[in-house]
Amino acid sequence: MSNRAAPPVRGYSPAASRTRIIVYWVLIIFIVIFPKSGVKSGVVPLTTGYALVCLAAPLAMADNLLRSRSSIASFMALAMCAPFGGVVALSLWINGAVTPGAGLAAVASFILLPPVFFGLFASQLAMIPWPVIRRSIIISMRVVAVYGLFLFALKLLTGSFLEIPYLTVNADDAGMLESTKHIDRGGIFKLISTYNNGNLFGASMLLLLPLYIWMERSRVFIGIFIAAMILTLSRSVWLGLLATCAMMTLQSKVTARMLVVSACGLALFVVAIWFIAGYVGNGSNFLIDPTMGGRNSTLDQMTQIGLMPDTPVDMLPEIVYAGVIVQYGVLGLLAFCAYLFGPIVVAKIRFPKLLPVQRYAATGILGYAAICLADGGIMLIPVIPIFLFVSIILLEAPRLMNAGNRIGSPMTTVPGEIFAGVK
Image (cartoon, rainbow, N blue to C red; front, side, top):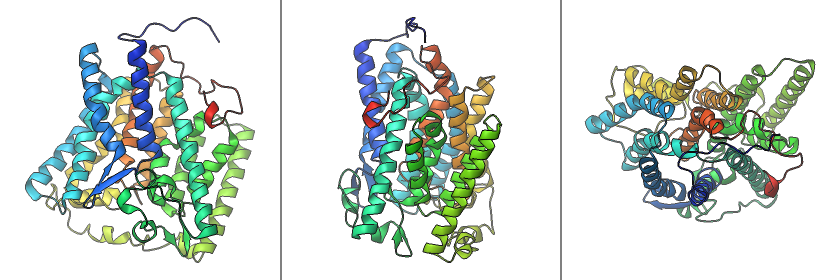
């Protein structure tokens, strides 16, 4: 590796850089590691992560304005998000919301957060050294996977969850995980980690999964993470995991070793899933449920589909695309697809050849898009912030490289790194 100093970054100062990195780490901790930290106002969660986003946004705006920072790619992605935000705003104005909580969730997810991330945070992310970003993702995924397995085993052995109010669970949800989070699978409780719900944990992790596997050097931690995903006991998470791993395999160079490893991995996955399905259900009847776990009721509502939104805004159901077309009409579904796939489209337009980090970020988005066919949980915290985080990594990766950060290969440390030793 060359010892030549990295080229200077415009507007760089050591103090500002340290502050930016501290803010970044705090956001990662309370959005990815402890997303449920906080309290509630009635039924509306007021999470620490969202509160920190609100505090960080004006700081990012001030710095961007003072330093004249902007991102064409991220602004293009924001433009792709704008139509769906407009549809949601129009529906709220004309039709109202079923509950204040649903209206607030829709505004936060589809109207407020995209401008904050694409318009403000994207340029700030480009100033974060790539090793810091890589380290944050690896440590975050290790922590939530290990804690998830610990919590799963603790519940299995003692019959109780470890709950830390204001940190691992919302203070107002303490003591109510079993009764309110739909995590009981025939007497066996799903792996929920700090997300308090197995399906939500799986959907959120699928967005980061390709980046994490690409970055992670420890096969042990990769195995722990895959085991955590399987123990969510969620069929939709299993399908998303399978689809994501298949897309990652297709991006790899075909070798005899790769084919053997893929075949062995698939065999182990099928055996594990079949064993779990037989234990918590009736084997094939559990895996092939014609009611889709009760989700077919959403499909039954698709008898009369309009062009524009004509119903009050509500929380989108598990089958996200069906919920979008029912609530927001055909134009709403088209606008939502632009919202979801916009970052990938922009990356393809802006960059002739995607870097490896960009390809894996795009794979995470596509894997999440696949799970939206079954259980996307898109309006639940913290799915949208993680989606937007992965999106700006996809769009800002070339700027990171131009700033002197090497991201062509994730292998920048020696083997054997542990929680405190990831570099």
